[in-house]
Image (cartoon, rainbow, N blue to C red; front, side, top):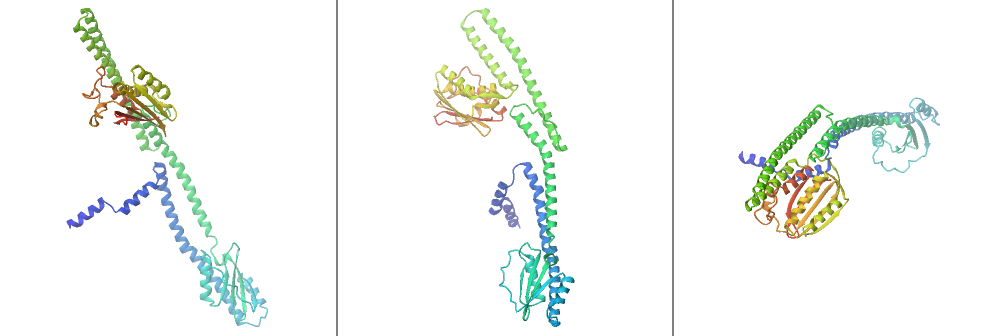
Length: 460
């Protein structure tokens, strides 16, 4: 029992390869959006149901009605043959022709010494041809030839008698359920009407979800929420929209409170630092006061850096940034520090970001590279709504195990890239904060130039 249970659990955990292959194939084929999948949920059962109904109708009703009509026509033809053979005194067969036309609604002609035409090829799909042939074979049991193919309203039947050929022309509707297409038209027509109604209704239900997704994406990128956004649609969608609005308001209030608190703390600390500076100035120019002034400058720089990091440029609106102008600033910065900088742009130069914040991001990364390397290469690629900026240098690089830690506030390396004594340890933290506020990220890797590679990828 234990072995059977273990085999069953193993089978459930690792399904057969054919099932996994079919699942992957089916997953790739079905729509990925909610609108497409919802339509599929509506259309697929409708198509299956109508296919079953149509099959049952064709198999039972259509075939049964055609069978009964063909049986009746064949029975009438058999009766005419019996009359011809029973009463041969009517040499011209005028009375028999009249009775067939008036009573049975069949047009007949008798050809003495006639022969049957060559057999025709069977049609690929003709329920009338097969059923009528079966009935003639079963009831009359004589050689025959029929023509049921074509758009004519008449069906021709030729039957070989002893010394003559009986030609019968019957209306197609006498032997065939010809009004079946009306049922199919009604079925397809009503399905199309229901499908159009479902599409219009679904569009109205999906639109609020798409608006909520756009608003959440804009908020995640640090952009303003669309002005026309408001909770709409079903109750559950309205609840989700209201919850998102309340969450956004709470986050904005927390950011405002944090920024206001830090601004106040910064003001108070600046006052104290200014007082220290004045007191040191009154003491005089001595070696000890010089070192204290340097410490005050470091504290002032750390305070400004931390305040900028906490504020995160969150109040800036999204606008256009020209990458060519940004590259010009980077070249000027590199020339001042005596570094070799090359910039390359693939795509259009105009991107939609928060210009000041994004410029600060790139400048921080390039300044960090120029501080520790002699040669820096910057390449920007704009493609399919995304901006990727790659910054390579030939500096000492950063060990892989420390590449996540360098983004932590106030983290400073003890080796390789720790020569910047004037830094606050917030440059990369601010850069990562700006990238993520745009809905992107920063990653570090080994550079082909031998140093560090920083890759910035944000929507633009």
